Length: 142
Ligand code: SF4
Ligand code: SF4
Image 1 (cartoon, rainbow, N blue to C red):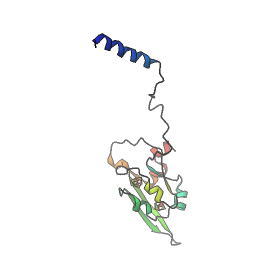
Image 2: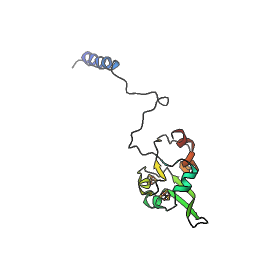
Image 3: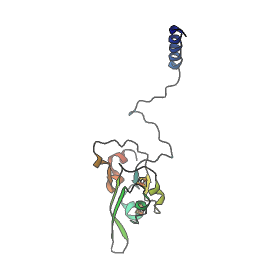
Image 4: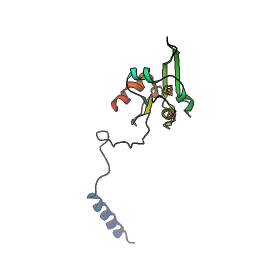
């Protein structure tokens, strides 16, 4: 096929696309809604009091985590109840499978809709309990 015909075909395709609806968006000013089934990093139910009440430091979430990226430390209170003293998730190892949230009988954790997790240091991917409650990234999207 002569080159001129190919050129005209190319221009025609470009022309027809000028009048179709754009699929691109002006990120980060505009953001697409994440689908309901999306599984972002784990977050705690939002207040410290909720966690005190809900999480019983049973370690089921750590046992079910295939990446072993959750660390928990606990203590026994005066009523002999187990309480969380430390909770950490290393997001650089998390595969966002959601097994930990499924395993949690107290519904103390759930997956979030956050997807912007880029950072400069690997250490910043380790989220403490406080960050999981009200860290800058999670808080921005709560
Ligand atoms: S989402 Fe999966 S990999 Fe990530 S912390 Fe939970 S169980 Fe582990
Ligand atoms: S499974 Fe739920 S209640 Fe048990 S330690 Fe994990 S977050 Fe807490």
